[in-house]
Length: 117
Length: 114
Image (cartoon, rainbow over all chains, first blue to last red; front, side, top):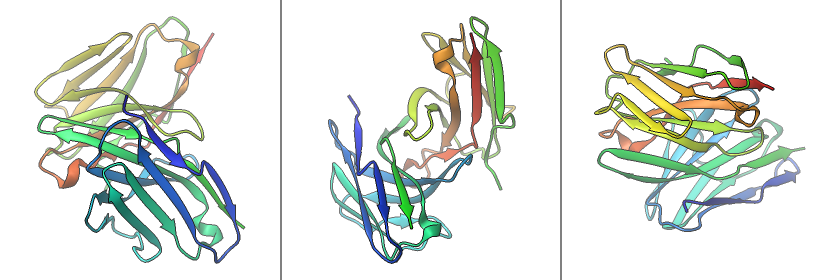
């Protein structure tokens, strides 16, 4: 149980195009999903917290107009990198949360490698 | 300000021996702690967690110890196996915080030598 998928796993695009990444919880419902970015040899950087049916909460320094997040259902959240540039190249990882009083577990997707040429 | 610190970027141990990975935190509001294992180009995999009401949690070869007064936790892997070689992330959350978001350390690369 607790499987999270991401699609695509790898994408290469030209500068200026937009890229959509999907995150799905396959066997459970997640009220909250998180989007992370990982730079080489760095920790996971939380970009935003996404709640079903409401606007995402972005971390400081993350441009909400550049990284559009939509959480349409309890099993799907999408991240769209708009007008991508080479500096947006990174490994993007989503997670789906199962949490309540006294426990908090996040299950991560396999990640999406974005390369912007 | 880094609220979760893993001060050892790497650790190398011999197969069969114990691996001890350490993590310190500064935010006294953190009350739930997790360890994740990550291979390159993959998402993190949940290993084990501990609530602040406990000081130890064990699951097979993995044991997490929590010392609240020292704001320190550690992950023990025994016996270590070559397949345990990966980056290990410590994470923490505050139940009263926003949406239970996790704060991660920078990770420790564990290498288990055959």
